[in-house]
Amino acid sequence: MMKTSLKRGSVAIVGAAESDLGEVGPGFSAMDLMAQGVHRALADAGLTTRDVDGIFSATAQSRFAGLALAEYLKLPEAFIDSTATGGSSFMGHLAKAQMAIETGMCEVAVIAYGSTQRSLGRKNTSVGEYNPYETPYKPFLPPTAYAMAAARHMHEFGTTREQLAEVAVAARQWALLNPAAFEKKPLSVADVLSSRMVSYPLTIRDCCLVTDGGGAIVVTSAERAKSLKKPPVFLLGEGHVTTHASISNMPNLVETGAIRSGELAYARSGLSAKDMDVIEVYDAFTINTILFLEDLGFCKKGEGGAFVTGGNIAPGGNLPVNTNGGGLSYCHPGMYGLFLLIESVRQLRGECGARQISGANTAIAHGNGGVLSSQNTVILGTAATL
Image (cartoon, rainbow, N blue to C red; front, side, top):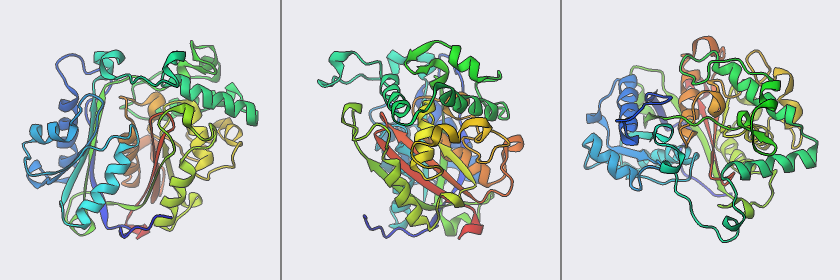
């Protein structure tokens, strides 16, 4: 186990906000949405750009996201990190922001994302890389990769398409409680099963949305957080694992790196799955939710399909999962991980209205990057958990 000197609860998220979501139309860039999210998150914290000296960002629409955002915000001396690991990037940024704050490299950090993939179209916002082991077979990525994992899970454990569909239905039920959610219509298991097939066994309703959007969170020391206007949400533990880059190199299609990243985050936080009040996992596809609930210890391996049935993870169920509607029904601008952190913060601050989980003091936010490649688990808590 890799040792860490990072202190449990030494930093806190003190501001969180989305940019405009959905389809922002022509005239907006990914950087516009990043900056919009930053300004809104700083306002949420009672701060301004004059307080910021750290920038952490990633987007598929800028090779040098940190440089571009520093220029946009006019912060030439800011500490910058633009590490990109797909949708898990922002959990990694949070851990790096903690390192930077603890070592004095910065005091107030913003972690930001933005994308206009819906307005521009998928072909204009994603860069295809030639893979000699996969490209000749013409996979439609990323759906083909996740469909392989879903099919293998069905083969090994008897998971059904109906059980996959239950994940999408639960996400939609949560989205109907979220005014900011992109999808507003009820969804049934039958609707999911009868929708257009994308890559067997995944239909279009098993796949995430394609939206524009962005957002930001603001991170500072626990000491400084005491003086700001919103209740701080503390970083209790983090763990990350990279198992592969291409799906053909994934060691086991039904066991993700979340097993190990979760173990690390739990160990560093001193908590376990049974201690989590709010569960936010990266649901780019319905199979993701099943895999991550298993791998993070909420049910046994192979039992995820049965676990999500009967509304168990929907509003009123036993386990509140993806309470904003997730990437399946709330928004998905390409890299979704930051939105898991935003929703976790809002839940722990009691700001979620009709979807609020009563008495929530702990949250797990699990990011996924690539094709089940990079797994990053973050555990957050209120002051009551320190």
